[in-house]
Image (cartoon, rainbow, N blue to C red):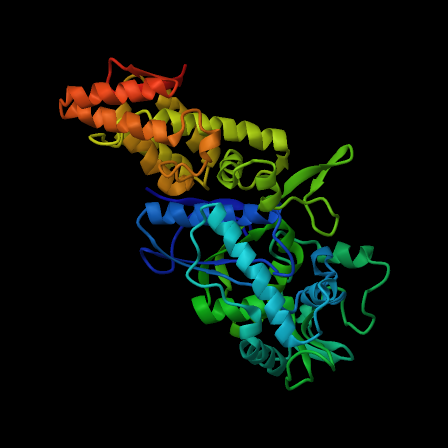
Length: 471
């Protein structure tokens, strides 16, 4: 079955055609590890994980690289002022009272990188093949900047080496950025030495902190890091580049410009971007953001007694390209639905079932159509209501679908206290079902009595399987 993906570059849904048959190369823009990731940031990684799982489900081998920015990301870059502001890792050092050294910077970055990986694991996200760190690839950055300098795409001013966007035909093509209007609307350029408003830093000078280079001591630009690391680990072009939509105007257009100027070929064939996670800020909804102070971490959710896997389920209920409006009530509602799903399928026989070919075909149709997870989840609930499918087949089919959804429903990642039926009672019911199949009626009766003594009713269904309910 063909796979269709929405390509941000062409603004259209396209049939996926890999560079190498049966294989997919994917680069995910990872976090700047100067602080905890918030749940809005984490949406990008649930999306990337679902994409990977979809390809694996379809039989592809996936080479996935996710960079870790631990140097070079300036505080003004998200607003489009790519050449201004303090390095975010430097801000972290100041915030935490650590010495202003590269060693301390690497140490604090490691602390938040480890916390980021913990968050990924909590969300049942498969870890990529590699997490290349920017601080470990300074020479690759320098090598790429040298190519751009030699080819005439770069120039040096008092605070660094810059890419000359006027020399790259088609700058701003990702997202169809209106460069002319952007320039016309800018009253004051942040750096008056720059030749053009859209020119961006390849290397920033810093006499006291950083690395030596042919142009002077300092730091690589945030954008050059991604170009250097994607080229090293995936080559150019590679198949898919993902990230959040706020990276389109500046970061991703700058990646395209410097990579394609350096190597005279496309950077990547498919660009995929997830929409923002919005949160109520006063009377209005706005993008969740650390700089605005309106953000929530996964740790915050857990303190609110909300399971991380319930948050993943809530995200999958919206299409990745649709903005999602976060509220505790909405996520708790999703968690209630997920606990019902878990409790229901754990009442079904876990052996002897077959995957429904009809439902599998429909499920694949949805997930292969640009990851339409809302329709895929709705299909699961349709399956649960379908009296023409046996409970054992329902269990086999839904757990098979979970290879893509990543809810890990057989491991019950929702805490026992949230489940309608605790896992120890489910285990007793499973043991009783096995005893019945083996015609060990004495053992089956004893297990039923144990379940009932714990305060639960066990009802055998006419079409097979059972249901456990609180008395």
